[in-house]
Length: 348
Image (cartoon, rainbow, N blue to C red; front, side):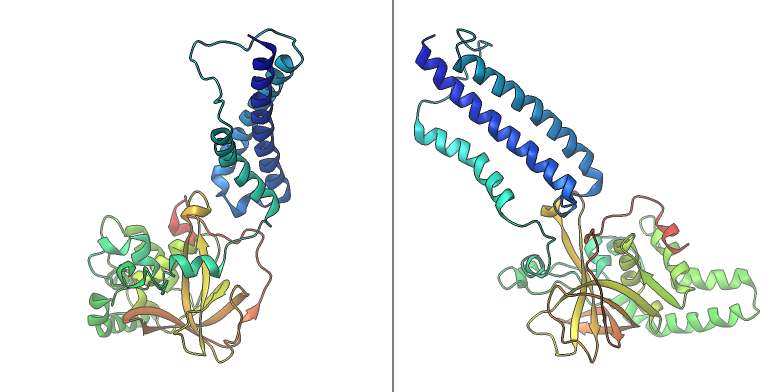
């Protein structure tokens, strides 16, 4: 192989080594700065770190090959008889390497930050976690199912909310009566009878049994805290059995998001749920009505208020009637994730 050809291959190998090394450095930078969680779920981080190790090994190999060919330490590159010689077209090479170089350059140039209301405006807000997660779709009695309003909102980014909870709305008086009977039972009636009445309040099928058990535990509390851990599961339970929690006090934190058609006293306290990476993140939230709702989007707040029920966009959803929201610092990890354990333990 000619000296000119060796030098051409050396340039290709050197550039490939620099690209792979750049991705390795970028991943290490994100991990050390604590910004990796903005882009990938914690359970996936180990795989990305292992991938960075593999990229580093490949980068070293390509740089070593480039040095050997460039300085004439060997006459020709290792031949695997697979004929993958780099193209001689400058434009083709520019496009090919640009596909890798541009994202890397943007990664270093742009600030690392958590997603917020700008992403919600594109994806649409889920105000009924039961339907969005899918648990309530198989529930035989509780309402709260949600259907995406994709047909209505694909072009305007409106909020996605739950369908009217017809089954639960029709049985709301019965549920209230059962709740009253359950309270009477707690004052001295047969515990087995009380448990039976709770089962009537929280019916389930094979798919929603855990949500029913969690709902019963939450129902026995005067204050329901919706923490980051288990946010999706607790929100789903509250939406599935919405009528059972009327009048309960709820405490939840998140960032402010507001739709253009909302009233001046309304906003949504929101969280972005991530399964694997930022690309699959989905926004969930609760509608809040407060006399002090003049907050900018993406302001992190803690809201304590009373659970109620309202209609938004023609759909029945859970509403929080609150006083003045408390501004808080954004958490180090702003996202929430599916809970992998026994969800009943979320209400220990």
